[in-house]
Length: 88
Length: 176
Image 1 (spheres, each protein chain N blue to C red):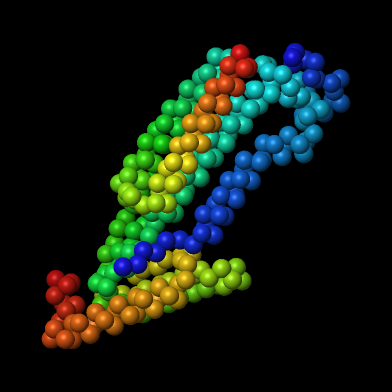
Image 2 (cartoon, each protein chain N blue to C red):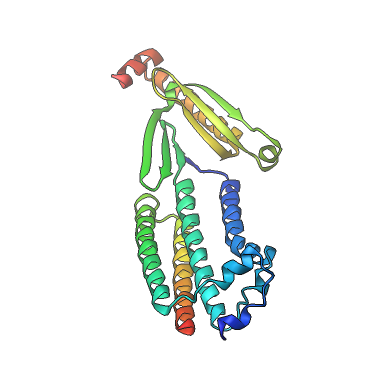
């Protein structure tokens, strides 16, 4: 769908003016955002795993948190990837 | 041995605050009536989805960072000592060890309607000597914890008396 089609005639408000001037982000920008986010989340995940393994190894609650965190993280990354592919 | 951690209300409040943060972009979109300006259809739907999921992931990770900091903040009470583990952040952790016979005074405080209803409060333990005192906030069933510490303290003193070492002498030995 063409972005301009979604823009009504406008009421002249600053909000309307702001959104009518936003350019369409390119696919490479989304890939860059995805890459940066993956690096940040990857590092954070390593630090979290380090703490869980070192200070609470074998704790049932921590194992549950670990599994839940990892599954949701992977699912979200897959959704983001599919969103990029659909957008581009 | 008893391991004391924060009350579940701490995790819940933290999670609720992050849930509100998660809803914030959608709330702004609806409240400012941006749907009339920025219609999220076609490929813009996927763009919005991409950024919303990214936002969710950041909050999700932040939630687990704070959860870990809260969960690893604990007291381990044994019949000989109290180990106070303070996990202030992911890279700031301190562990203190206090002998149970050095305890002099225990103060428990349940302050506020919610704290009384849910049964959490703070506990403050004063120890002999120049050592730093112990305190733990939002502790579940603080009276039970106090009773257990008192019981361990009494048993420890009785053990010392039976072994023929007076409390003052024992303090001198352990401090030196």
